Length: 202
Image 1 (cartoon, rainbow, N blue to C red):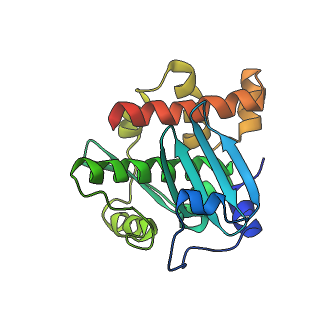
Image 2: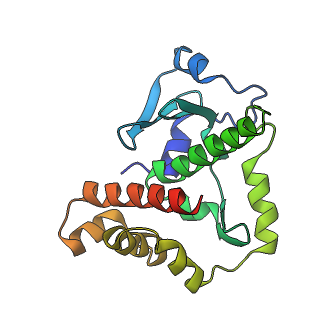
């Protein structure tokens, strides 16, 4: 398993780059791909040596620096917030935090486009880590009851795996051994669970 921390050490830090390349420009830049993941049939993540991530879902795509994937604030029903410290993701499979970042940025781009303000959403203009730091001051506690409500949108198997991974802090291989399945099966359930919850709550 390649962790987010290990991947960050393997690529350049592009977090403070003045210009973020377009999806096409990044793919044609000649920078080698260091890590990649097919989330599902329509979703793909490519991490380049120059420190940028290309995230694509169907016809939608976005580019952002890998090192922008730090702490994360999840907003639920526009009033409840869940804050995850950056350390929470650093030793996890690298693509979980990257997938959340990509999904959020594509959703943000779509919101702008729907308002006829199709402005590219990049970390340079609106640094996600700074937003997370601000919300952290207001929301320091994660309520067990609210987490249960969030996970209720996933299937029974996905919910069981997500509880063990995110709440009990078990590793993928430990979960796989306990459930008698492969580590890849656990990874798939986690990815699909995240996507399902995000589709349900928006």
